[in-house]
Amino acid sequence: ASGPLPWSTGAGCCHPALLEPSGSSLPTAEAKPSGELFYPTYDLAEFSWDSLNHTLNHTALTAELRGVPATDPGGGFSNGSLAFRITAYESSGRAERLPSLLHTADSSQVEFVLAGVAPRGNSSRFVLEVATVEEAGAVRRLRAQRSIDDEYTPTIFESQNSSSTLGFLQWKATAYGSRSPRREDSIQCRAQGLHEASWGLPVATILQAYFGNSLGSTCTISALNVSFGGEEGEVYREKRYLSWSVLLGFGEPPRDTFSPLVISITAVALGTPLAMLLLGSCVLLLAQRRRYSEYEPIN
Image (cartoon, rainbow, N blue to C red; front, side, top):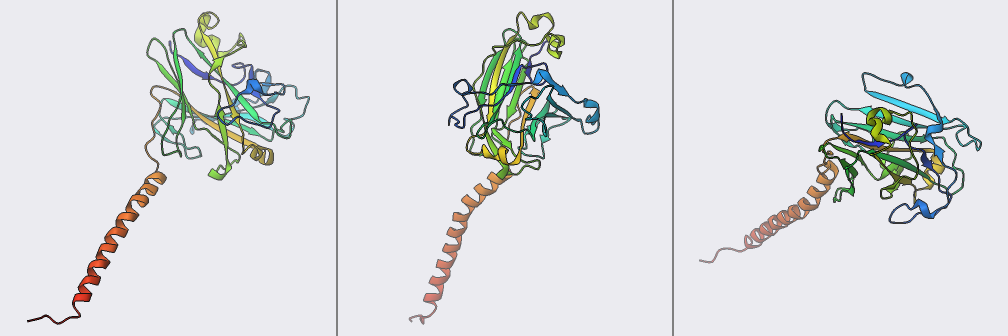
């Protein structure tokens, strides 16, 4: 198959994958890691990963890849771990757990989970670096959908090569600080624009099997930094839990209609004035009829 592999994360796919800025400030527009101080990065290629056989569910089409650094001098992972939860879909629908991403049969959801990992500073945050590997001639764009319905508004990365194979990565700019996420557990996340990766890929990876010899000659590697925190940055320090979900697939990205919540609010906002107008008209007509009924007709 000659299609793009839109995004690749995990062991052996990206070298500096999990970063931790040491500063406490976060720009309001977007994350700009180049202007901040960083602790040494957690290289996912050097993690020790558990076997997928223990978590693979053939019925639910789910699996969880959990790992910790092979060497952890600081002890940040002594009571924690990093995991990727993968869910495949056989039909279109919406995920039950927040952020309730809309999916198709040609997509899968990947949930990045950081649990129990101790930050290395009082005001530090985590930044996840995600890599995209594409064949020559691929057309890329990163866009955020704008809508009055921000409940499901996603950010979308699209990649299309010369054979018109479209791949996408879609996510909502919200992470969650609870194992049973609610809206009040939301943590804002910001994505920096795509930039050229300054590192290379390991030789023995699934990418080598997918792209073959073209991986090192014609393929391009770009990176995207996703920063978790801001004003809500203390949520992780208190709860020591962070989850962020993305949808990865081929074809056109699924498009959301208005959510039931927004439809209900719009109906109430438009219906209430109309109901009050009708009720006022009825009351006025009844009052006029009652006032004239007190007089005897004049012959």
